[in-house]
Structures are given as C-alpha cells and as structure tokens.
Image (cartoon, helix red, strand yellow):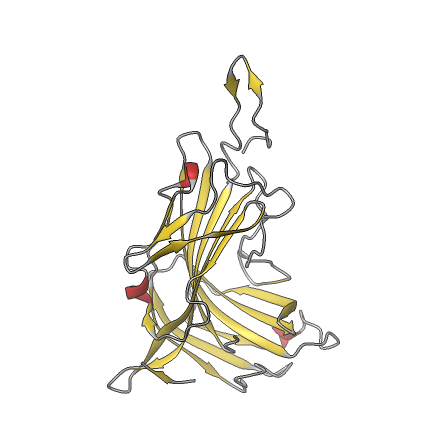
Length: 272
C-alpha cells in the first residue's frame, strides 16, 4: 500500500505507624509499551519509506506479578501474548494515580484507566498518517502524574527505513494459509527484532506464532512456521507484523521497577 503525505506481593499495612510498600526488587512491577505501527509511504521524490499510521501506549501495574511477555530467545513460539489488554489477575491501580499523562517531543496526552492496573491511550485513534518514526519519538515517551513511576520513559526508537514483503499478501485478508512470504528490512539501532503471524476472526485473536529475528535482515514464513498454526481454526485475517524493539527501565525511590519498551511494527494488513 502506498500513501502520500520482586519480593512477594504485599498490601499496604500499618505497623508501628509505618507502611510496607508494594513491590520492590525483582521481578519488575510495571511495564510501559510505546507501540508504533508503520506502513509503506512515499515521499515527494517517490522514494518509499516506513511512515507511522498508528501509535498506542499501554501501562501495566502488577507488583511482582507482571504477565510474562518475554520474546523467544530463538526460533518460534506459539501463543505468546505480547499485546496487553489488561494487567492480569494481579493487576492493581497505581496508588494515588487516576490517569497518568505522557509526553513526547511532538505531543502529549493522557492514559485512561481501562481495568485495574491497566492504562491505555490510542494516540492516533485510526488517523492515517505518514509521520516519520524518528520524528515522532525523537525524545522517547515520558510518563508524568504517574505516582512513583513519573519520569519513566520509553526509549528513543532506532531507525526503520523500509520493510518489504515478497509473496502473496492480500491487503484485506493477509497471507493465505500455507503460503510462503518473505519479509526483508533495513533497520538499525534496535535491541531486538521479531515477527508475529496473527490469525484473527472478527477482530479477535485466534492464534499466533512469534519468531525472533535478532541479527537478521529477512525472515520467511515457511512450512516450519505454518506447522505451528492450524488451518482447522477459522480466521478471516492472517496478518504479519515485522517488528523492532528497544528496551529500557528504571527503579523508583521506593525500590519498584518499571520496564519500558518502544516497538515499531510494520503491519501487512492495516485494520480500522
């Protein structure tokens, strides 16, 4: 498509006029994702580049009990959940926080509380754009009015120049099941990279496979990948995300840890 333009979870309890803080130490207690969604754009000289059509922020808080969203160290993994919709069964609201604020070099906004311990903002809200990735997040994404996590920042992204897909890819339904498709890219300055094949029905995820691509410049969705999926499961879209990630984090004054990640994802099928 071309467009122009770490201790056990402890509640606050009173004890000789002192309180025991939530969290503290490993594992992490909170996680911030700054997610950039890209597609193929064209500049005034007809050169192709990756432009941003979507930008979403999510913040999870579950002291010492964050859901595991680690990428595979190698190969491919079926069913990995790396796009949170809540903070899990152990999610808790951040103490003394109603709606955290965020800011980049170009804009600012507010994360809405969705469920206990989970805050979210769809910054672009389905607004088509061809903003350059580097321009959008040149200073990262910083939190404020977020209690002890104020000042935590999702890191500055790397460079993503282009992503190309070779093979049969329908702009509405994605990759026909079993079809070989190769993604190639030109990217630098990221900590890790991965691809995810996402099969969806009526907008809901049916199944997925996530494969690490660290140190690579291409990836082929082949028979080995398809063998981890089931054509017996009904899906109306088989999407492909080609993704790049840079990670950071910080520790609060009371010992709670927050991990932060900026992720850029080229999406084969752009859905409203």
